[in-house]
Image 1 (cartoon, protein in one colour):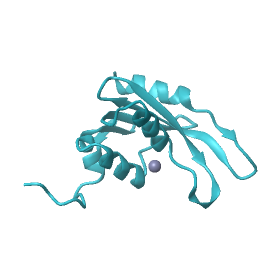
Image 2: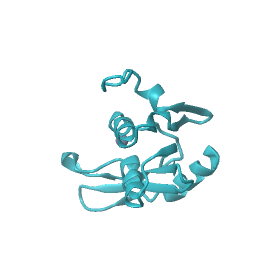
Image 3: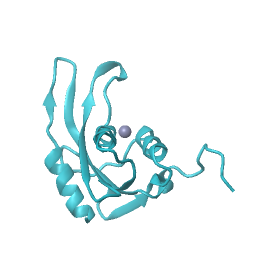
Image 4: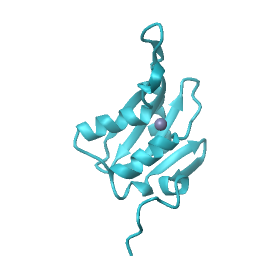
Length: 129
Ligand SMILES: [Zn+2]
């Protein structure tokens, strides 16, 4: 699957809506391609008091619910179609749920793909020699 196809899936997943007087969801969508070739999607949930979570986090929860944890490709899209890189927490989260996820390819902007390792080098974990 190409990043263009993954991007299209993420874009179709967008569903911005107001949930309540203080909370919103769906203004960012993520699509992740797993090792088994499946695509998992999620949207952000924006709430006060840090209780919401990112679209990547939601997509990862769907993937883990389905029994997978190795991510091959990731792209996240804002409601206007702009590709946005994962936040620091999501970079770390991705790297912790599978030992090879540092190789996960991430589209950070149009025509630019990097790995999770590129985004968070110098891991805090002890190096295994
Ligand atoms: Zn995030």
